[in-house]
Image (tube, rainbow, N blue to C red; front, side, top):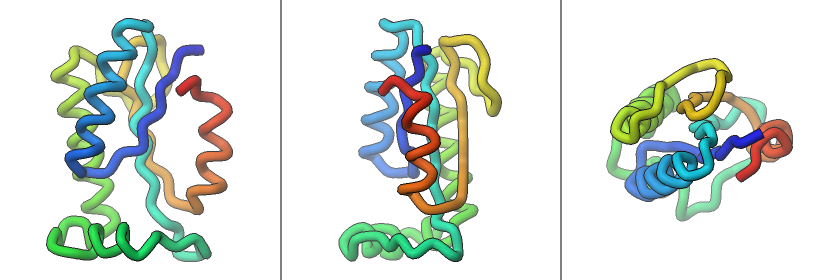
Length: 119
């Protein structure tokens, strides 16, 4: 298994992380999974105040969770294409760019995704 998982939101620091992951995956013949998490309505996990301020601040696009998910997916797809990866929504042979978006509690979702990824 060669799978690099990168949490994705449409932020400059995510673009840097994705560029690094795509370059590394080319060297390792690995797949890159872009993983976007939205809080579930029943989730008792809250974001730190400084993160919430960033998200709820100036960008109206980030106030709507679905717009945030769409913009994160667009960033992932654009960078995948720039690095020559095929964008897919289902697992396939590496190298590829695999997009996943889930709603729920980060601690539960990452405990599911973490064990099946290498990095």
